[in-house]
Length: 165
Image (cartoon, rainbow, N blue to C red; front, side, top):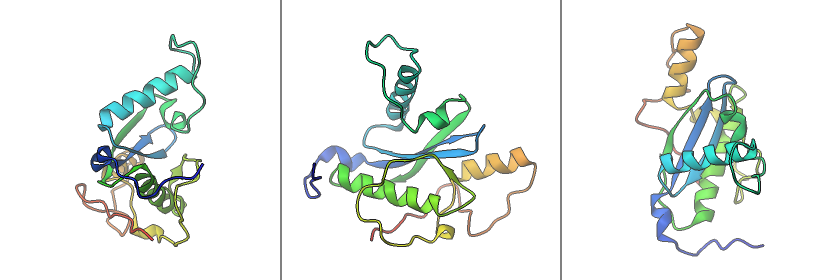
């Protein structure tokens, strides 16, 4: 199946890239959506509970990698970037850039396994991207070490955006 790269869908004007961070495993899942983040998290929760057989649906859901961060019920989530775009393909390419950037940093355990959309041949320097400030603050408090400002930290209201190839 070939993806159409130039179709337009106005729902994607609400596109955003988000993360789910598991405090128990120090892992992160990166996703994208064009619905509200709360709605998307309800969908993740339903998918997980259905996969575990906790729902009354007749057909259990298949495994999703987001289950790796949801399974301990010890997580938080937030928005990495608001990314208005024209279609699902563009949003998935942007999500793929965030995943690729995080996977290049050996200190970040990314649970995403699906191959990102688009051509991602560019090298994304890992020091350009940081974990969300909320994650950095949690890690610092958990380890009882002060958060050290560096190229890995950014103000809580600003996240550098990966540039498209």
